[in-house]
Length: 77
Image (cartoon, rainbow, N blue to C red; front, side):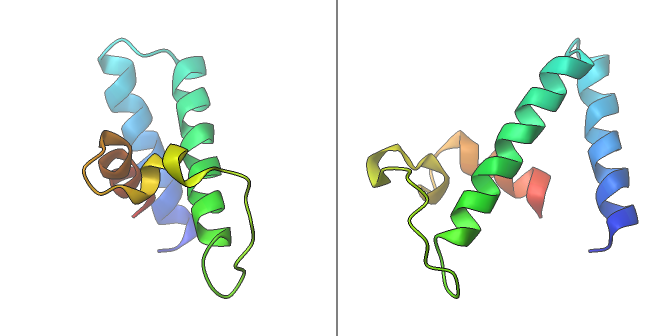
C-alpha cells in the first residue's frame, strides 16, 4: 500500500464519519490512538521484540473478539 492509497483511505473514513456527526477533532484523536496502538503492536513483535509498556491484560488489539481489532483491521489494512 503506497502513501497515496493510505491518504485516500483516511480521508474516505473522515468523510464518512463527518457525515455521521463526528467532528474533525474527534476523528483525529481516534486515528492517532489507533496508529499508536498499531505501532506498539508492531514493535512488540520480531524483529524488534520491544517491551512497549502495555500490560498483556490491557492489550485489546491482540484479542480477536474485541471491537478494537476489527476497527484496527479496517483502518490499518
